[in-house]
Image (cartoon, rainbow, N blue to C red; front, side, top):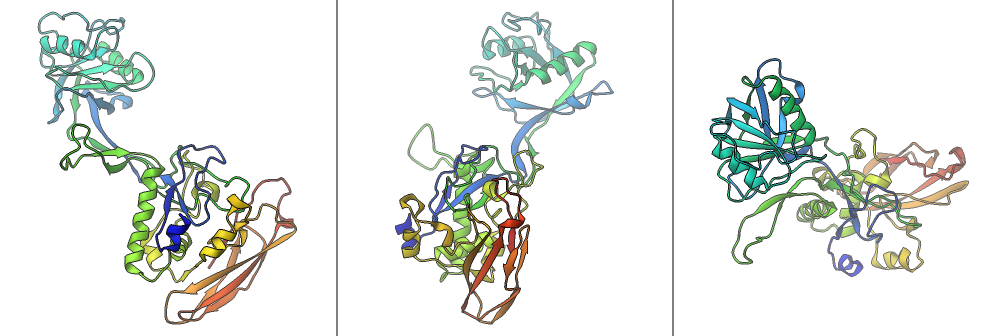
Length: 412
C-alpha cells in the first residue's frame, strides 16, 4: 500500500466489521485511509401489511412490516384494503396448517398461520386450497423469518412472533370483520442518517499515536452489484442491499477519484487531507443519539463536494511515512496528517503541521482551538500556491488526570 501511494494511487481500506468495541480496527497504516461505516437515512425496503378495519386499529398493526417469501410467487400488485384477514383456527398449536383446511375456510382472504412442524410450502398450499389469496406465517420464536415456499402459487410473507400475536389477537377479537391491505411496491424504510453501524470497527489504533479510523462513509444497506449465482457468463445486472465497511471504503475511493479528476495535481496524501479537513463531524454512535468521537468516526463523514474545494491541503513523503511506520517501531505522531494525537502529552505537547494553499492567491485563516487548551498563531497567511507550517501546542495539565483520551478541534 505504501508503494501504491508512492506511485500516486489513493488507498481506501475498510476499517473492519468487528465493532463496536474499542481497539477493533484493521489497517493501522498511516498512509492508508481506513473507512468507518454509517447509515444513509434509508434502511432498505419492506412490504407493509396494513390492518384496515374495524376501527380503531391498534397502532402496532398500521402497518406491520413483513418479509416476502422466496422461491414462490412474488407480490406484483397491492392486495386491496377490503380484503378479509382470517386467523387459522390452529394458530396456537405446534402444527398449525399441516393438514388440509375445510373448503373455503379462507375464501378470498389473507390467511395468518403459525410456523411449526411442517414446511412453509405445505402450510401455504393447504391455505391456498381453502381459498386464500395470500398467506402470512407468524414465527413461533423471537425474530423474523423469510419463508422458503417453492411449489406455491400465492404470495407468502413472514412476520415476527410479536407481530403475529398482535394480528392473531385482533383477528380473533373481530373474526368476521377484520380487513387488511398488503402494499406494492415495497416501501423505503428510514433510519438515522450519519449514525454509525454497530459493526463498524473502532479505534484507538492499538498503542500507536495514530487516529483510526480516518473517515466515515455510507456503509449500511448500500445498493451493490452482486455476482450471478447461476452462471458466471453474461451480465446479469443483479443488485442487492449489502452492509459492511467494505461498502463504505468504495464510497471513499469514489470520492477520491472525483477529487483526482477535478484536481489532477493533488497527491494521495493531499486528497486524504482534503476529505478529512472538510468532513462532517455530525456522526452519531449506533444508538443514533450520542455524538461519535474520533475513535469511532475518524475526522467525520465524507463530503466530496467540499473536499474538491478545500482551500488547504497537507502532503507527506514516502520516506517520512516509512520512517514513521508504527509496525516497525516508528512514531506517526509527527507525520503531516490532518489530526493530532499524543498518548503521553504531559504537561504540554507540540505539533507542527504544514498546509499548502490550493489557490493562486494568498489566503488568511483564523486558527482556533476548541475543547482543549493550548497556544496557536491566531491568524496565518498562506501564500498563493505556497505552504506554511503551523505550530500547535496543547496544554494537557488543564485536563482531568484520569488516563482517558480528551478530544478537541483545531478550526481553521
